Length: 252
Length: 291
Image (cartoon, rainbow over all chains, first blue to last red; front, top):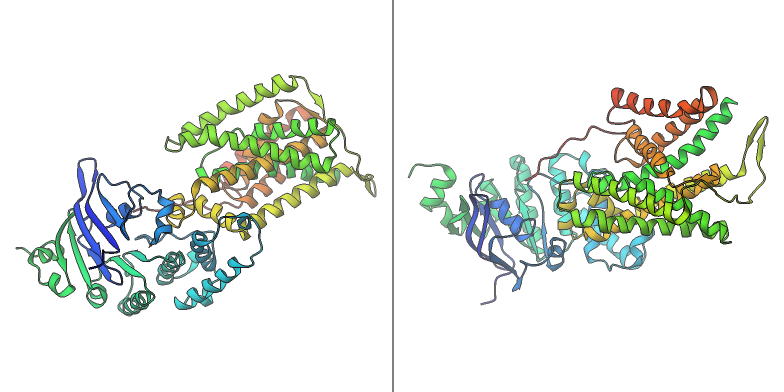
């Protein structure tokens, strides 16, 4: 059996006296679409912050392709192949849609003197063609020269995904990609997630929209108060009494 | 006469604008003033003076003085900002105040406390427009200032490092998750800030012919005022604020009294703060929520 792409072991984080994530074990295999679900405040975004080193973990480890990420500086995480989006969209107000993708690509370009010149040739020029292809893929081509923060909400979410994909991640962390979407937008998102997976990108997403989770995920992990309370395929989790209780608020 | 004074004000304002942009760049990244920008400006003037007096032609002396000022700015980053990266923002502010006192006293030791004469640069003949006489040195100053601002705009808008600077200025955390290495970007920003402040110092020397270690404080405060009047954290705002303050200053010197010029300059600042606190080109900043 091949080792998982992402492997969290005993990952723990406190905020003062509050246990945000408690001894979490989680494995995501290459090519999967996995989901992290749970009530608000269950510690899902904290898990993303621990993986991407926005926060240091108190205990436990994060391994990606067998490599320990615990001591990498934050800006190196994307270099090993982990990209992410944010729950509350974080676009750059001074940048166009295309520029967001170009910033995302930065990480793969050689850090030389060419960074300091306003003309692009060679490698940078090829990357621009790639950027335009990516925008086409996410249906943002017509919008490429518009300031990203003037776009409608659903498109802003896609700009965030485009920016993360531009880093060419092997693993994409999506924090509530369907938040604020109507049912038809959510269906489009499900399709998009599948085509992203077809591009050899493994996905771990945090999601409240159960329809999206049920439609697209191979594996679901349920968190409650920082603790893993259930894990399995969507249909297994749907029948798990503890998951139902925590997530749907049913009385036991 | 009036028009001539307005033109003078634009020349003076272009120097304030450069200093305002030097402040704005660092403000953008840390949300905090680097008070020592004024002293980098002053050192730029002294570097330029020493180089020209040593026989270096102006077109080499200007870039060398700028680079020297850029290096001083890097030292400020290393000693005043980097060790305090995780301290409350007021701490680096205070540390840069200390740094400006240090730099001013260093200049006192090296160049003395007296006013020194900045050597003139033989350039083109003065331009006569009707009754108006515009000294050629002013063209040199304005032309160089405009060229520098355009080059900076191109750098920030069109290069990969420039995009990195914008990303870091907007959100350090998001940009580092995208792989932008923050320390490199911060160093470039401080260096560029120093280049601009240093250039402005050389232009100041050329225009007024006399420089002293105290000019940094005076011009630095006007650069801050220009930044606030134009709109915080906005390069174009710094340009407009700088020009407005330059023009106000020369007009009040010409028509009222030289000794009251600062009253008018800072009244403009107060007026701006009362009528339009976000600055002429500023937008009201809303704190974005963070998960």
